[in-house]
Length: 90
Image (cartoon, rainbow, N blue to C red; front, side, top):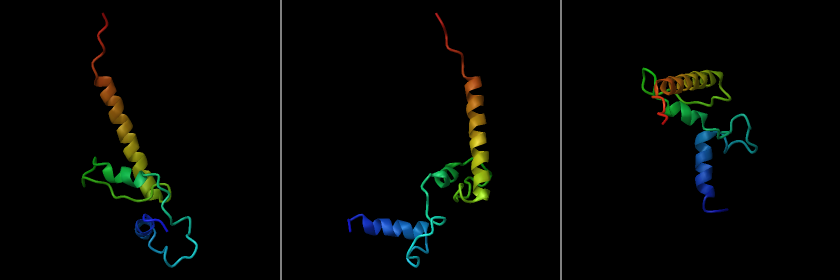
């Protein structure tokens, strides 16, 4: 066992609360580490100041939220690009 193993076990317990009871982890319950939950947490553009976080690939509710956030971000980037001043040519 490495020195990092206890920390990894604690993180697994947070992401997958039943892992100690299951001899074989259920792949549907284990975090797949794609960071979409973090994207949801960092998105601040709603009336509550922050979106609820969840597993977007596995939960359609959070998947829809993530799609909405990404669409808003793309639209904001397009609007920013269209309002940028054109480069001067000499």
